[in-house]
Amino acid sequence: MAGDGFTVQLKGRGLTSAISLDGVRKTFGPKIAVANMNLEVPSGAIYGFIGPNGAGKSTTIRTIMGILFPDEGTVSVLGKRNAVEARERVGYLPEERGVYRKMKVGAFLRYMGHLKGLGGAELEKAVRSWLERVELGDTINKKCEELSKGMQQKVQFIAAVINEPELLILDEPFSGLDPVNMRLLRDLIDEQHSAGKTIIFSTHVMAQAEQVCEHIVMISRGQKVLDDTLSNIRKQHDPRTILFEPMDANADLSPLHAVPGVKHVSKQEVGPAREISISDDAIPADVMRDLTGAVPPMRIELRRPTLEDIFIEIVAGEDEVSDPVVRERLRAAVTEEGGAY
Image 1 (cartoon, one colour):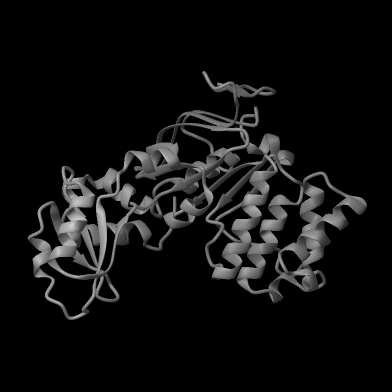
Image 2 (cartoon, one colour):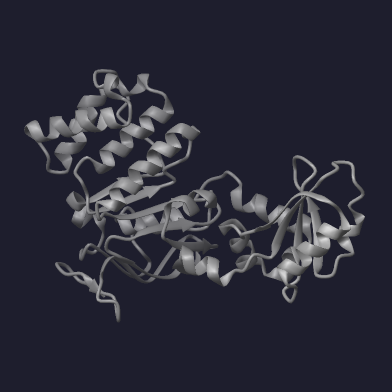
């Protein structure tokens, strides 16, 4: 494990580790928020921490940031014991949103820049440039309390990146943003990654991680249940679901259940389409051919499993989620709103 002033070398890869966690455990009374967390984040990587609210994502991030201290284990951030000791090289957008409401936007960002070692004309240029980039150029002299929540969130993002940090940690960065601003923020995150920055962000909305991340860390009940690249995860989980939409919305779909290889057929929330799960030994092309013969389709396609599907499969086990009712209950648990540890 790294100590002060040096970085961890990743075995066999010749890369340095921006973040290293070794046996980290954190409890709150009887609640185990993080259990035996081991993690290496290479410099320049973009990692997504995913899992339902309360899974331990935010506690892990707060431990990395030095806001919380582990009960057991050690942490290294850019060669330091936590992000506090490397604060001028780290940008952080916390889950708990907050700006100095009575301060003007420009003054708030200048203050945050000063805390990170910036000043003078360089800081002023950065403040104005970033405000223009997030379409808030006309707010520089407005009080933060006059902005919408989405605007305030963009101001906080600027505060996190204004010092061009080596490491950027974003806790639920898309929460509360409309689709247009979600895309803007995704583009800015991609830009930071392209510039060589190391990025970690957490989310309970797993589709967001699929759009942004190269590497996924799944966390459930304080335990890391998956740690791999997105491409490897997809390779290891073959598509076993067929999306089927009948030509006639009122057609009798009972013949679909009798097609060899079909495990169960579930109705989507909207429209006549069905999700058809197939058995492990079935050949998807054969099943699709037989489905087409059973009921004429308007659309039929093999659906790649989402991170949400994979999470449910890992946490609950395939046998437990063969029942569509159980699967939907689990899916709701993955995406439910609530406080996060």
